[in-house]
Amino acid sequence: MTTTNEATLRRDLAAAYRLAAMFGWDDTLYTHFSARLPGEEPRFLINPFGLFFEEVKASDLIIVDMHGRVIEGKADYNVAGFTIHSAVHMAREDAHCVIHTHTLAGMAVAAADKGLLQLNQINAEFHQRVGYHTYEGIALDLGERERLVASLDNNIALILRHHGLLSVGASVADAFYVMYYLNKACEIQLSAAALQGVSEMPEALSRHACEQFQGAEGQRQLLWEAWLRKLDRECPDYKN
Image (tube, rainbow, N blue to C red; front, side):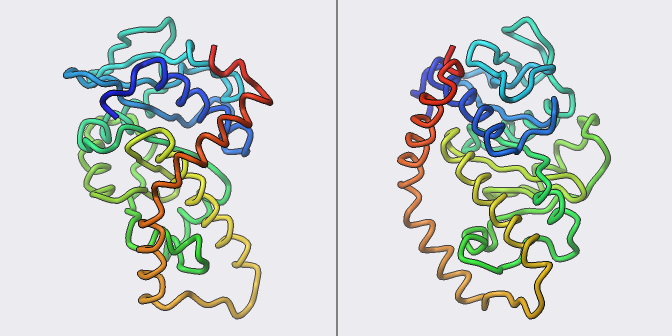
């Protein structure tokens, strides 16, 4: 990932915003995705506050350092977004991309006593790979960063109680894949809640399926390239 240039990171992160809008993950002006830039000084790309996800272009993304200073760009950022994303980028060397959403299904599961259940093959991909963070209010207190990181630990995703979802990845493609299927797992759980007689998968079977998913993680890039082709057909200006 360290060899990925800024132009490619901008394109991929802008693509993630457009795809999120396409999938209905946006929350008006709120929530945020980030990508850490290569270099000795930690800095990351994030959306400027005030744009809908469907409007974000590669050139719109601003660069912020870990002290909260806008290094490049003519706009400001969501303060809560800085708290969350800087926390993860500072603590997790492997978390080059961080995605945070407020989807209906994600927020519903974030309010569930037992969190994410093992109801389906898709849910099994997250077996013992999701952390949980207790809600502390809107993330404006930089002191929360240490607790966020502790809650995330070495997991690929975090369920923010009474708030939403967060995913991390070694690339935008990885983090977006994780969020796509984590949100799908939450949608499955939300739909299953209306049924009677729903049961969870046995722990051993969930663990086995999760290991199988991990063995196929190389396929994520193929899916990302397919999503980029979809954007190139439907809204190619995201690259501008």
